[in-house]
Length: 175
Image (spheres, rainbow, N blue to C red):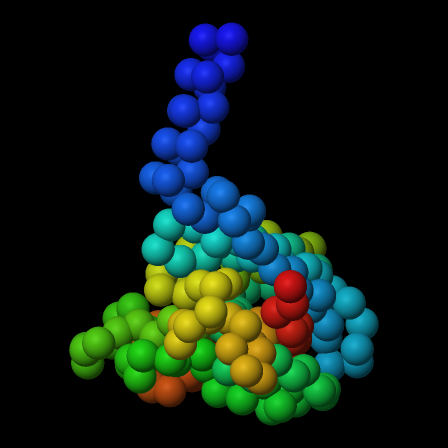
């Protein structure tokens, strides 16, 4: 009986120290489609300390680097995906980790996606400041958000979008 009491107290202490554990792990998913509406990949998003982790797996892309960003609207109408709006930027920061202006980067910025000769890529990104909870930096704000892959590499410095070219794939971030 004493061991059960100790385990119970330890569990309560753990949940008090990490309230997100008591609420359950928050997560989201994305089904990524190309301009023709064909599913070419997925992304899984989960809450982490100070942000969210995005795990992406895609195929059927041209080899090389592609910009990938979180966009401000949860709407992906092809072929141009302009319905996804601009980059998710709730803090009005500048684009790119290499931008000389401060503050930077904005919340929707991710590193480039490196696609192999076989047209496939998988990557993990940590997005500091983003959340799956309520609030200004929530990926579930009114209107939602989306994940967009661009035709070219992001230069990681040019406002507003890193000169990453056309939008070639898109997926709505969903609970």
